[in-house]
Length: 506
Image (cartoon, rainbow, N blue to C red; front, side):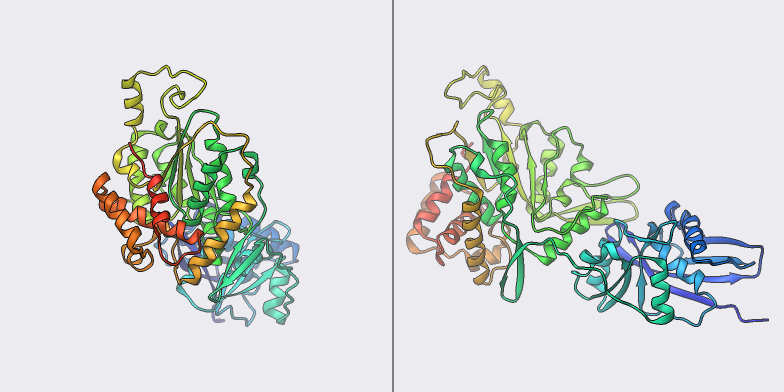
């Protein structure tokens, strides 16, 4: 009796937001002809049998008069995703050949004609694997190559078809014909680290007429990634301005670009790599799980996680539900969301810039120069009380907007971004890793150094306004950003005075 050959390769599945390694084995068994996949494989993997049969038939492969058994281990781990197709097809086709797949991770969905296709799960899986393992060798679809090749610790081999992949293992032929067309735009290099940005202002601040005081405030917001709340009458430009904010945000490191794309891929929002930070704007009727993440079977990332390294914008701020508003305090403070389930706890990073816009009263005309407010004091108080003091305490910059001075010279996004970029370079040359708004207590003491006059002004403000510990730290961080815009190593009195102007007065 001939010895039964067992072949195997490595793949992985996504367990919540972490990749878990899966060993895939196959064998021809003496039994009635058939094809079975075991090891808690979900529907998409079970359906792969039909895709694999069709793809192998196009190569002239004839199935043996034996049963084909494919095992996915560990057997107690749920597996999902059509990216197992390519590896399983290779195992079946090369079952009787003396070929080893050792050292290779194989990913790819198969078309009925044998074409190797990309899936949304490949990129986040490989990003997670690369963070845990060194020098990975991966077989991937050509369409995934642009993104995957940017991940450190990975040697990627892209293929268009199953036939090409078979020739790679049987003949050793491989030609990297895939052109790498990066869409990351320009970059600056600081301390041997590249930071990418795009000067493509799809929405330009030049379209916001007047409001130069607001534009100055938003330059400070963007430079330090500070949380901001705009209050003003309807039509004064609150939402219009905040939607343009993403285009003047600081450059991103490759790590940030990859993490943003990984989160998008997990929820099925596949996108090309680019150097524009995300902008998420959920409607005020959105549910709590949709904003913070969750789900009965799987803890899916919510808007907070998808806004990581970018902007989370709440328009009509007081109209969000009380439970959503109060739950927002933890991700703003800890920069992460922890979703607890019976069988797992999933953590998502939420280091975003929080931006919000609201009217000054229910009718919106309290600050208007031309319209009369129809609200009584009780209605205004009830409206403003929807936003609790602890939540307001986590917002760095509060700005009350006027209805605009159209005789002012219009400032463009290009001019504003130049200021943000200069401040970014200045802070990085100082050796600072985090943005000013995200500085820890230790970093505040290290980088937020005030001169004698600035210290005196801050001490007076602490006594006059009864500032708490968080408010003092907030003033220091905003002052640090203003000093960066002035290219000043030490925080001076004008910087502290301007920072105090952005304090919420209740």
